[in-house]
Length: 291
Image 1 (cartoon, helix red, strand yellow):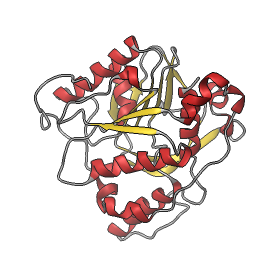
Image 2 (cartoon, rainbow, N blue to C red):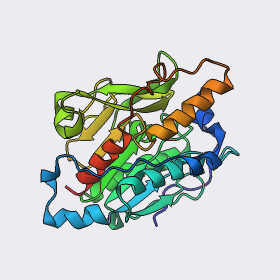
Image 3 (cartoon, rainbow, N blue to C red):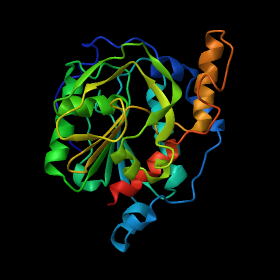
């Protein structure tokens, strides 16, 4: 394990408004155990699979950084369970390790993993808290020194990657986003995500208060409105939304949110009238990690 930065420094930056992940995940980890798991059996664009990378796909080693400060809730456990169940749905034999860059300041040895995942989190990705700067250093170091290791960044991670390489992050001008939304693809994105090439979009859970305003140099947009990037070196893939949150869990989260505020629940309103594509996106990520 590698340790970046020093000291705890977990309360130096102001939090973004407590909306989205912080509030939606208030229902607690215990509810996850009863959720049905969606399993995918088909592989998209399977022509990319070769004898050399099939073994990596069967038994990939994946590290997940849980990028959120402790706040007295079970939020970090919920994030872990989301990734654990999502990857299990498509990779029953995966090796999944979790790391705490916030308090423990522990980072994975990038040479030992095929894929490193940067999770979402409850803190401003644009702040200068020591542990945040440590994550940014780790992102840059991994990209520079370990070209065979891929990185997947989600939500806060998406913003952190952009910032690490010179992009800009801002609060969402229209306010917090809490919905399942259709993300329009660019022409490059349609080629990268074959399952969505005909529709021209993917549908996924979005929960965030901040977003990328200006992409980092050397990154290509796979989706509109700065929602998804891949770098020129083909080693970093980022999503503003949450492919690790299944359709079933999206229902649970948004229903809980609606009841909490005494609103009339509407599947159409929340974008739940159609299944989301989160696990299809992760399936493509695993394929990409072995390319």
